[in-house]
Length: 241
View 1: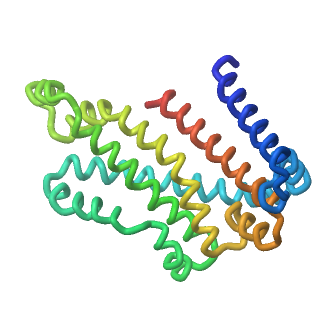
View 2 (view 1 turned 180 degrees about the vertical axis):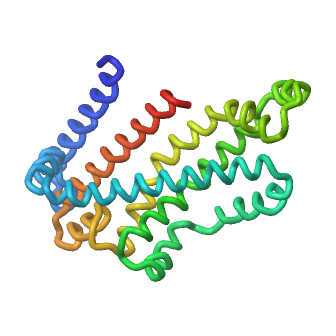
View 3 (view 1 turned 90 degrees about the vertical axis):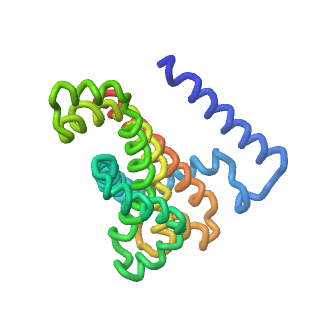
């Protein structure tokens, strides 16, 4: 409980400051609704928020899982193969020069308005942080450990499996924690471009109908969803990595 006291107090102070700002300035609710009005919208539209939130959560989980798996496999391949470092690594770095957000309309054109383009967007955003962090960890293995394994007759595959990968687990955990925060961004951007479900779609729908309190409620739900995914990934990393 002590661990959560500071974040809860900070959240309470932020909400109180937000509400005081609305009261003191007298800003119209269709410009900036207060947290009380947003909370009321969450209670009124909880079924819609839950329905769209579950869709976004599914997209985030799938994108995070697939992107992390691809990133881990790429990092191991690049660290293990000199040829891969020569040809794949430059392409991987160059791919980050292309704004991922600009690909959302293309993905929607290719794959339609279903689940696939949102998952792909999340995968693209998750993939590079995981691959980059894990690759740095594999390269940062202490040389003495590798030399000792080689002296004991370990093959390159055994060195990778028994020495370099275990030593790189903290770096992988860092990449996964970053990816857990980035994944919802890709999913929501995909929903903004074209979808009929999800929190991003609900935000656009509420904005178009001037239901700003509902739009803020969707943002709050998305924030809680992101924090929850980040907390679960952090727990899994501390528990298993």
